[in-house]
Image (cartoon, rainbow, N blue to C red; front, side):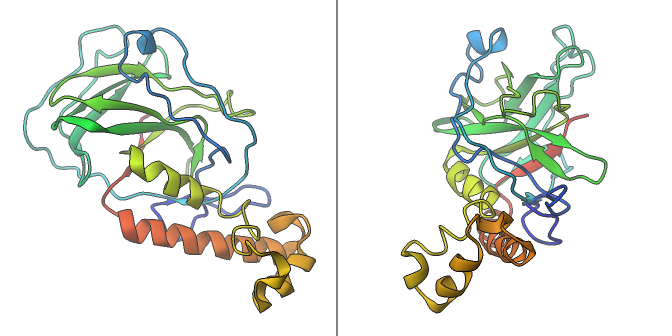
Length: 253
């Protein structure tokens, strides 16, 4: 997602022919279900689901900064000696929570929430955050049910093709039902004009104008690029308006 000021605190930029802030996600995705399983802490699980795209978006809500409820630290295993799992973050969907990244293995995280959720999973999405705060999606979501104050340790995977060498220094946290709309936002650019014109060039005057001019989608030429970004911006603004306080984009190191 692009660096659209005030747009999705998920709208992150595109590089090269991308815009400045954005998170990148695969066109298709697999939600990992082993976050917190014993196997998850030690072995890889989850595969990329195929094609990837370059999209822009803008990061989600804001960290709460305040603490509430119980305070739990994760200083119980190597790599987490400075881990603070107190209620540092908050969203209306997840409640207060804490999260830590291992200093020995960047893919290992500890996560604790203040509420129990046995019907809807909470998902962590690994990202690379640059110096300007732009977030780049580098792996599939990993999700888990939560129990109040239970410390969950698990692995996030840098399984997006071409991004395995990126530093994992950020994470997006949201409930699983938000994932499809998040992905739709992320891929508004690569899915244009197809998603805007499901009936093809005959669907509307807009489609009759743009589809012949953009045979390769938004990357066809500068005009198509601009229109593709505008389309994505509309989708991402809608996501932000709907879920402003429901997810967080966190720098972890």
